[in-house]
Image (cartoon, rainbow, N blue to C red; front, top):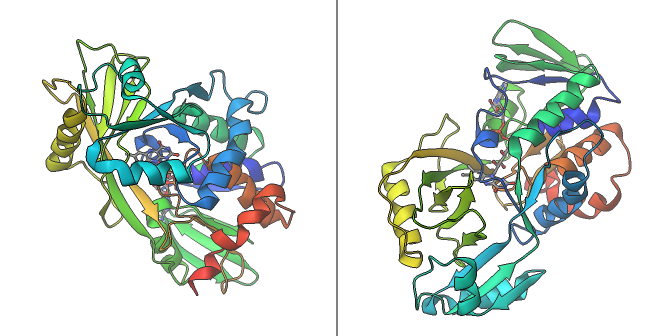
Length: 355
Ligand SMILES: Cc1cc2nc3c(=O)[nH]c(=O)nc-3n(C[C@H](O)[C@H](O)[C@H](O)COP(=O)(O)OP(=O)(O)OC[C@H]3O[C@@H](n4cnc5c(N)ncnc54)[C@H](O)[C@@H]3O)c2cc1C
């Protein structure tokens, strides 16, 4: 998503090649997300990029997508009696959150166990995102502007030659360009190392998701439910199912990550402490990598030492909901343009902050 959003928005102005090692774009983190846009999530730079992305999702450019990119899905944060501090912190920190009663929470999610909710908050201004439509929209935009999508092309040797870069891929193709944008997700540090650029210390973390059938409950119109301490969440999926996650954050090396049985069981167990749902079987489960910088903010900007090397990494758990504005910021900085409102987060996302 990071690569496609930047490539698409750069493509009217420059010749752009998006280099992807897999057969299918979006095979890694992008295809494995929970697909939710929430304003009250992540550090300040993330909240700004999410806020600035909203207008794009609500009114994308002509021809971007035939389906809506966002659909309203409020978020309910329940707290049990032992989680009052977390609830206070959430309410103190968040914009547009309102406290609701346990009865109101149960009316929204009738499967909540009687007596579980000691306090609850509702974030009404949240959305499901159509990740595939967003991703395909960016790729279509890239192609429409004459850009290239090179699949099955692992960027291996990346060398500074003269005043530009030479990138050799596993297929043997060679790309030459004055600018290389590193949007390799969990592999961001590996790609930097290929280019003899000092890594930032990125840490991919595994997150697991499982699909279950909540019958006899009809969950289609429930809000997403996120435990106030972020130890699990559940989101209605494909009308009749529920996506359940233990909100795990296990440090991992970059890889085609698979879900662990224990994490799947943990997510279901935690969800069942709050919701009276019998899970007969897990219909499908997957895991993806959420990749963070050392301080949790994104890294968007020129490398402090390697000329023409640009970072667009550290999207963590917010790479979809921030993608239009993050891709716009990459574009403005690469073109040397004023980034407008996003200029306020430049110091927070500067890759040079890591020394
Ligand atoms: C379970 C889960 C739930 C999530 N929920 C949300 C959510 O609700 N909302 C949200 O906004 N975000 C969410 N996220 C986070 C979001 O999925 C990521 O932030 C986002 O997908 C990151 O996109 P990316 O393009 O940086 O990474 P990726 O999608 O992983 O893309 C990086 C690409 O680089 C390619 N690559 C790597 N090395 C090379 C190389 N040497 N040569 C060529 N290609 C290479 C890889 O093949 C890959 O396709 C979630 C993530 C998970 C796992």
